[in-house]
Structures are given as structure tokens and as C-alpha cells.
Amino acid sequence: MHILLSAQTYPTPKNQLAAFVKVLAEEMVRQGVEVTVLAPQSLTTSWKNKIPLCPQKYEVEIETPNGTRNMTILRPYSFTFGQGRFFKLSLWIDRHVIGRAARKLSAKPDVIYSHFWRAADQIIDYAVKSKIPSFVASGEDEIIVDRFLGSPRVELLRNHTDGVICVSTKNREESIAHGLTMPQKTIVLPNAVNETEFYQLTKQVVREQLGYNQDDFIVAFCGRFNKRKGSRRVSEAITSLCDPQIKSVFIGVAAGGNHEDPECEGILFKGSLQHHEIATYLNAADVFVLPSLAEGCSNSIVEAMACGLPIISSDLPFNWDILNDRNAILIDPNDVGQIADAIKRIKSDQALQKRMSEAALETAKELTITKRVTKILNFIKLNARK
Image 1: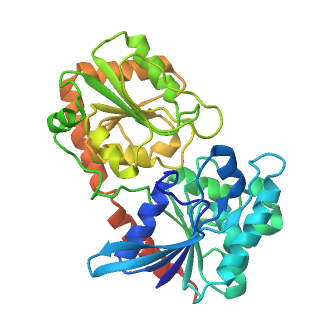
Image 2: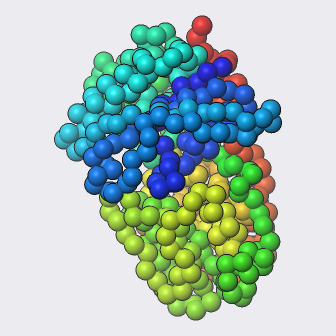
Image 3: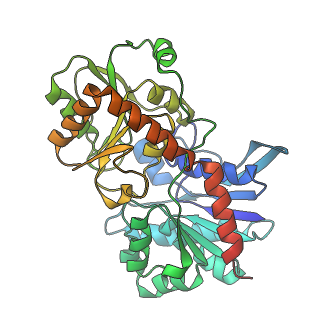
């Protein structure tokens, strides 16, 4: 089977955003699928954020159980103008760029798999004209694309999408409510972790490797440094506790609107990492805190659970498929006091910390990329129109 994976962006060594798309694509290849990734790179975004451009076409080698296989990455140039009044122009340009690149493929794919609804809109005209089954992965923190599409294009997506893989029940309900799909076409599969990169290590050994004190209580955060993710609220909660034993690790970058740089005493690390490096820092921590205001389903939370961390996160629908009172303390993400109380509770109760760590590991066993891709491929095979 040859899958054309349409995405809004794709990670590079200099820009790790959307690493989860890469993880998914590579696992598809490991499971015997031929994958071509088609993801535009914005010239305007590159210039504005000083992000280096990558080649418009290149191959990557993937190690599989049956030897090395190549995956083709297509990154045609495009222009984007944010989500303001020129957003419709961005959509139109992407449709043109993506459609042109798809038509130039040497072999017609068997299936199109779009990561998020905007990517689906980019490729749906080609899918319909070429009579290729089309699937969409819905994982947006908020689905807004239908506000700009208009009824005819929403109807086009609804009628010509064979199936929708939703990362949470919240995303499934939103996709249906926005008229983009129908209940019978959907499945809920929470995000998953690459189990070969994210797993529990011996904390003492990792702390020695990083030069961290064995007696400190370390809080980990991973996400963009902005209001939605809550990096500043985490640092404010730590400051309010006035506990010199509490240290922190803030993994992320200043990206998107409402930038909020975390500021508190005892920060051991603050900045971006290569995706495969994150597990080391998570394994040095005692708890993972992510008070998000909106998510699809947080990859960072799943990765933290795979490293055996108790979770403190938002008591909101996007978390309810993967978090419960066994593996997490769910809080009001806007309440710094609740975040601080949860950190203090886990620090002061080692038995609770141990129980939640074990429950997190148990949850993560079912949220592996291997299992998730197997379920996705089975769903595609079952629902693809001939």
C-alpha cells in the first residue's frame, strides 16, 4: 500500500514542530507501507521566524524489520499569512501548491492520509479527481478551518472523506459538530509514543549523567512557551511554594501567540531539544506538569507517562481519554494555586507518587506508536472505498 501523507508541516533538525507526524510516518514505513510525505514549507514563516528552508524533495532511510526502506519527503514552497483576514488566501495558495505537487507524483497513491483538517482541505480536490480514498487525522487543539471554508467545501470534505481518526472523544465530537464528518466514519485513537525512544530509565543514573542533585524534586514541563500551554503558570506555581528543593525543567520554544517565558528560581534546563533527547530529561524528573487550556491529545503527556511520571494537567475533555485519578491529578489549568497544591501533594506523598508512576506506565503500554499505527492501517483497509 502506498500512502500519501498530507501535512501542514514536517519537522527538520532545525525545527522540531510536528515531530509526531514524523513518528507516525516512520512507523507506517516500518509496518510495510510505502509513504510519501507532502508538506508545504512557508517562505513567509521561514523569513519571519528565521527558520532555514529544507530541500523541496529528499529521501530518508528507515530501518525496518525487513531491512532499510526509503521514505520520500516533498516540501514545496508556499506562502502563509496567519489566521487573520488573509487566512483564506493562505488556504487557496496551499491548495494550489499541494495539488500541483500531488499531480506530479510518478505513481498514484492508494490512500491519502491528511494530518488535520486544514491538510485535508489542501489535498481533497486531488483525491476526488483521482478517485483515491481519503482519511483524516483530527488532532487540533481547536477546529477552526470550517469557519473559512464555506459550506460547499465542508460538504466536499464530509462526503469524500472515507474515515476520520480522532485523537480524543473531544476531537470526534468537534469534527461532527462542525459538519466535517459523520459518526459512523470516525474512530477514537489517542496519540501514542515511540516506545523505542520513550521508556523508563533509572532516575539516579540519569541525574548523574545530567549533573542534577539526587535529593531535588524536579518538575518537568514540555510544550510551547505560551499562554495556551501554561509554562508561566507552572513557574508561578513553583515560585509560590517557596521550596528550594523544588527544581524544574522547561523543554520547549517560544512559538505561537501569547508568548510567556517561564521564570522561577531553580530552573535546571530551559530550551529546545531534539525529540529523541527529551526522554532523558523526563526520566530525571519526579512529576510532569502541563496546564493546557486547549489540546487535541497531548503527545507530551503520553511521552511523560511512558517515562513513568505522574501527571498534573487540565481537568478538561481533551485529557479524559488518557488521564484519570490513578495516573494524574486533574486541575483547573487557570488556577495557579491548584497547580501548586498538586505539586506539593505529590512531593510530600512518596507512596502516591509511586502509585501514580506505576499507573502512568500501565496506561502508556497501550499507547504505543506500534499499536496505534496497526489500528490506523486496519481502519483504513476496512473503510477505504474501492
